[in-house]
Length: 313
Ligand code: GLV
Image 1 (spheres, protein in one colour):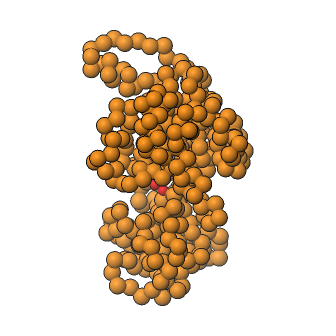
Image 2 (cartoon, helix red, strand yellow):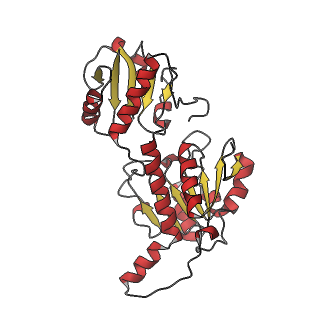
Image 3 (tube, rainbow, N blue to C red):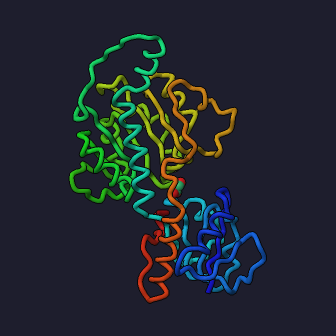
């Protein structure tokens, strides 16, 4: 029984080495080299070439080395074995850092003061307390719930929106298509942590931006997308910024990555671009997570964080 490491985009050499060094790891095969497909029982994947996993007759489980499984689910030949995503405290903590950083950056007007400093201007604006600002989180899975808890602790008024509307203690929850409008209307800072599915593709569009609260204390609403690039319609976000429906957009993810040099998002004064690193995780933690799940599975235990293929997350 072997673990196949089938990674693109990240540095596969490092991952193969790390898995080989991880105590308790099964024998590790490198998908870039010739291997016996029948020997593979588990696969550790990121942007794995479509069709590769279908060639593995004894595959028992697929481990996606990130939280979002959209790239794997886009493979129509993906075998019907359990697909496990990362729900790791390290990844979750880093995403919460990113969300809190950018919520506070908007709330405390960091850009305004940086511009004033560049002009040597002692600019003072009223600073509303956190309790005056309404943060809305789209996607209330592990990541959304963790960020909501920390933001609420700081004092923000936090609400969540999700497809099913499962209750989250201490957070006002809006559900489904009918909950979206009222959720947006009460939101000054919108955080998108949704998975990319056929239902969520393009959800961050012009109508959504225009539906955000326009009467907040911060001079216009802000959008933070740390989910997937396919959630956003870049042209609509730029239009909403230019029309004044949106004061700022912080984007960590893009339809095409790396973001092409020709994209107008790079230079727009109201856009912050980060290179899909909101929740880059400690690889050693992820290797440990995968090897521990394999150990449990081999001992007859249940795999954790198995993706529901119907909902796509
Ligand atoms: C990163 O984008 C992830 O899915 O964890």
